[in-house]
Structures are given as structure tokens and as C-alpha cells.
Length: 259
Image 1 (tube, helix red, strand yellow):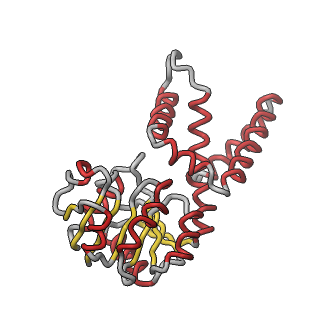
Image 2 (cartoon, helix red, strand yellow):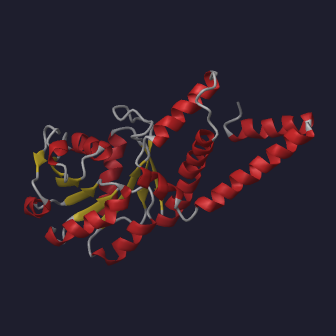
Image 3 (cartoon, rainbow, N blue to C red):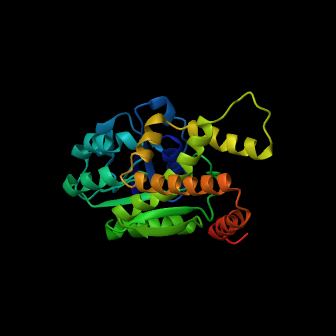
């Protein structure tokens, strides 16, 4: 299949390398020097060149805030038999775009990086394929992820964003609150240093990405759950209730797999 990838950051570059092992792949990035570092792919000099390449699948791998704008820029150059694909971590805005786009689409979310995952070892990592995707696009990425040993989950657009509020907003907020309370001059223990490393990796991400994750319409529900649990923990601490603390710890261990 002829595949064009727009955006050659960490994820776009990874897809270009993996897909070029069995397909004809071309890449375009506004930063031409960045895209030209990729080997084994064709390099496109501009948006119009994407259309001239005549891809059958266009993968939009730009940053979350620019995803719709990138589609709007490239779509006038695409033939109607081209399937368009996004990998946005929040789907609300892109779902609205697809309703008016006039193309078959497949919407995916590789949940393995680049913040914490080893992008060269993605076996047993997770990926989401949106159920509203066209059949051909969904089957293509099902085969692609299965070949790499990636676990596949299927959600609707709204189910995906609700799940993202749980799996991204919850740890993001936890790390941000930790970072907000950090005194870098203290002598850290092992647990502190581990949390510090996680917070540092998270805050190395683009500000707009972090904000978009937090602005997920389902985020406030998850934050309310966090604050409710914090208030309960505060109650246990103030009461110095050993029995309630033991029960709380038991439930926590059960939540994370019965340690």
C-alpha cells in the first residue's frame, strides 16, 4: 500500500520506520531537515506533493492541537479513495471533523509512548482502534499491531475519551500535584526519586499536549474522584484510625492487582 505520513516527530517517525518494512511510505514535515533524517522512505517537499504521491492511506501524526488543521491543509490534494488516519490522544475534536470530511477514516491511539515506552520494544503494549473507523482501515491496523504483538482495544470516540480521562488524566494530575509540592533542596529517598523521574518525563512533554489531555471533557469527573479519595485519606490520618487505615490499604492493594 502507498502510505503518506504527515508529521515526523517521535510517533510519526516510528510509524514510518515500521510501515516501510512492508509498504511504500512517503513522509512530509514542515521541518524538512527532521523528516530527511528518516531512511528508507520517500521525502515530500510540500503539502501539494502529498497529493501528487497519491497515497491510499494518509496518517496524520502531527501534534494534537494541529491535527484538524493538518487534515484541512492536505485534504484538498487527496483523492476520495484515500483513507485518512489520526492518532490523536483525545478524540472529541477529530470526531467532529470526520463528520464533514468526506473521506473514509480510521482513528487509532497507540498507547505506548513516546513519554515512557521503549519504542523499539512495543510487544504487549496497548493500542486503541475506534469502532467508527472504516472496515478497511480498521483491518489494516489490526494486522499491523498484531504483527508487533501489540494488544488491541476497540472503543467508540466517546468511550475512548472517557477511558483516556481515567488512564491519562489520573496519572497526569497525580504527577503534577507531586511536582507542585516538590522542594528540590530536600534529600530524596528512593521512592521520591522514582516519582521525581516520572514527573520529569511527563513535564518534558509539550505544554499544549498536557493541556489538551487535561481539557478532556471527562477529566473533571476523574479529578473529583481523586479529591474525594484524598479527603477520605485525610480523614483517616487526622483520626489516626489504624483499622480504617488497614482497610484502606487493603482496598488499594486489591485495586492494583491484589499484591
